[in-house]
Length: 215
Image (cartoon, rainbow, N blue to C red):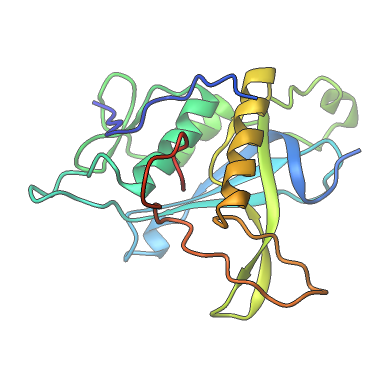
């Protein structure tokens, strides 16, 4: 059955579009690139658009699972948590099982995950009819920022993996999460006019306790 590991779904109520920052968006496409990257277990390219954007934000949900001694997906796996951020936001009760295979809400293996998600959760014709776009529900809330990659020495527009519903609870949840991540230097917004600062390890955890599940 879909595996949640140690990640619990958040129900926290704590606390003109730019290209960066918080965005109200619609999900327009999911592309499975896993076959092109055999060294990764998952590679989904997920496209979001807001009401003003000509081009999508592309969020790459990718990586391989941390596994326990029995080769089952570890409950604290970073990739598992990022998958659950996404599936919880879109309201899909499927996910991955303890072997890391995609399964639906009935525990049936999913052979084409992109086809299933596109059929059930995307707006594939978004932008093709301006009149129809007026009725689009921008039901997701994301945060985008410029992240510096020291390996390539370039900054890239990045979608934070935590994706939430665009309602008061979801917005408060994400905004408090981003505030925490910035304060603890897990998110460092790159400014081309200033000296480059390291972003830190986005997938790591800090010592002590935290109210948030990190990337």
